[in-house]
Length: 363
Image 1 (cartoon, one colour):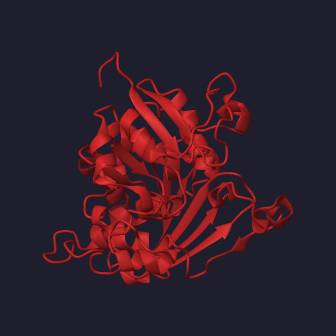
Image 2 (image 1 turned 90 degrees about the vertical axis):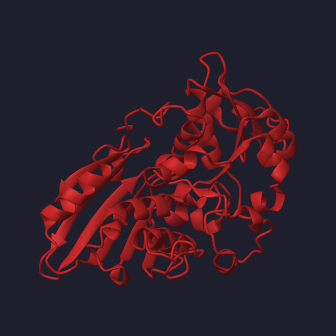
């Protein structure tokens, strides 16, 4: 980008948690400016009246969700919207006018029937699925650069896939044995008023939910399937690849932010902890946002909170010949808005870390 020209950004769904995180991070981004805070619920309300942390930083009134009009003004649009919104309004003309980064699940799954099965809605624009790039930068960096449409991964999926990807890719674990046990803060459930998310319902408690039915499950399976079968003729050409089937169980914990994914898998006989450590260093040693902490490390969400970082550690249980991998992210940053900006940076030829090199907050 030119030093004198900033990327013009529009946010549809700017008043949800992910949208607000985008607005906050983009405020300090040296090469971007938000020109449209889109929100059905707060049209004409100053954005800083919705989020008091943005007083004097984003006092512009919220606009509607007219994405076709926005596309005429913006260079890139972030859609932080419920499932089904973007698929229902996206057109070729919009993609000709600007680039789109979608934080919903509308274009993450290549197989339309899988999407409709898990999300219980009809997909209104499957014709755009073939070109949509799954925006996990550490895996698809080169594809993201030229994309018109990026499907920003989900928070649970980002943490789970990146925790396991190197081991799946290198075939040192048996994919059919994968179990992911994940914990998330309450912001992952969104800003909508729901009884299950009230303070009295979640405080001093922890619970599993959507057991065996969570909608991020097929996303994890599809992407790990691509990794495991990479280079096998006739596999990755098929939507969804050759299936990997996992157990994924999410839990809600009484904190605002953070995800911990504890992933279990049986090792290929003879695999050592030293080999596993070498694999993680091979894949993530140069990654700016992944900190591999090594064997025996047990990452904590507090050490990544408010940042675009991910910490990974692992333990080998020799008694069961299983590896236990632990990954932590901030679900609102690396799991949503920060990752979306990472994608934007790549799409516009900026350093991938632009506007994202800030340390976690503590305490």
